[in-house]
Image (cartoon, rainbow, N blue to C red; front, side, top):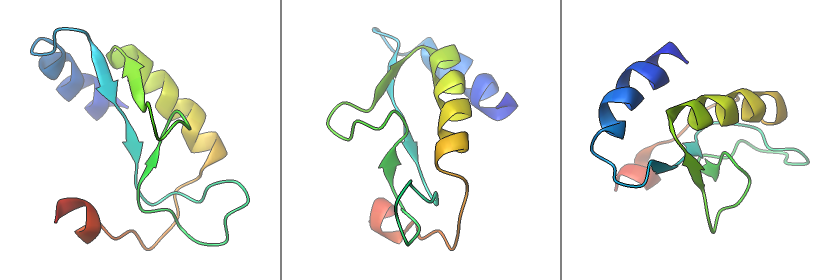
Length: 80
C-alpha cells in the first residue's frame, strides 16, 4: 500500500480526472477454482475505475479480503 501511495501520488498529478483503472493479478476470486490473472479490483470489468489514489488503496484493501493472492500468476497475456 505504501508503494501504491508513493507512485500513485506522482501519477495523480498527470491525470485530469483522478480516475484510475485498477486491476488485480494473481488472485483467487470467490467461487473460482483457479487463479485469475487479470480482474477488476472493484468487481466491474466494464468500468474498473477508482477515484483517487486513496480510493485505490481502499479498493485494494477490500479486494485482498475477497480475492486473496494466489499463484502462479502469469503476466504474459497482459504484457503482450
